[in-house]
Image 1 (cartoon, rainbow, N blue to C red):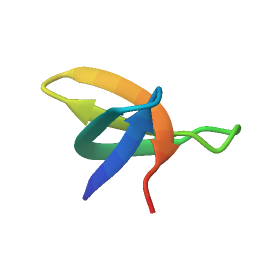
Image 2: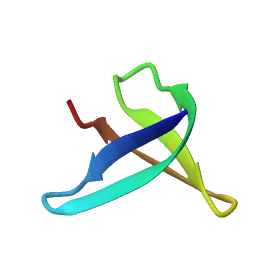
Image 3: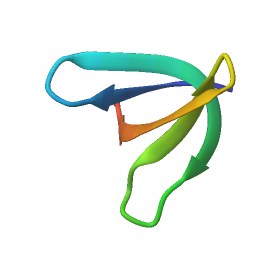
Image 4: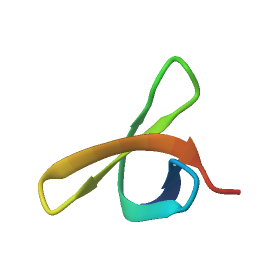
Length: 41
């Protein structure tokens, strides 16, 4: 499932959902790299 997260003030990343972290951030995978950020509603 594709999800979009925001990293910093203006960087959006869209990738495959990996997991939700305990602090509320979401982790997604893009081309083997994993990124964590706040989910975009």
